[in-house]
Length: 138
Image 1 (cartoon, rainbow, N blue to C red):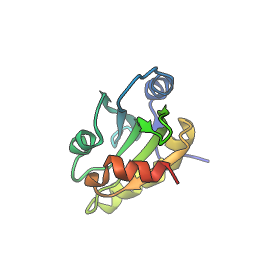
Image 2 (cartoon, rainbow, N blue to C red):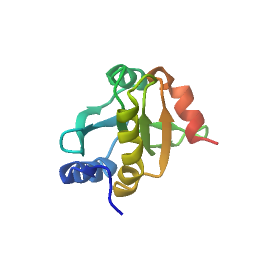
Image 3 (tube, one colour):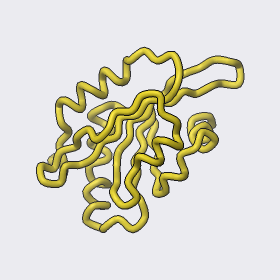
């Protein structure tokens, strides 16, 4: 089966390193975009110790992005974990062609980099700790 977009091999390696990085606190995020000319998913930004509110500020208002997020989850019993979350961000008002490009590449990206927890958002302001916690603890 052919894929709409390929994934930059350097990005795949970076996500593997990101997955196994030792973190003692805070969130970390890899923001990815599709290079439309090459039909290639590439790294856009790499952020360490970032709040979800600051991450929301980094997301463009009219262009989709994929975000690989290592989220600092504080459990009620005092434990901390750092689940890896795949955020597919497709803001309202995106051109149908761009929306289709990101939608068609999403599953291939998710499977290639082995991301289990997936959340879709259309509004960057959705990204709050309360909302993320509700997505992870059910």
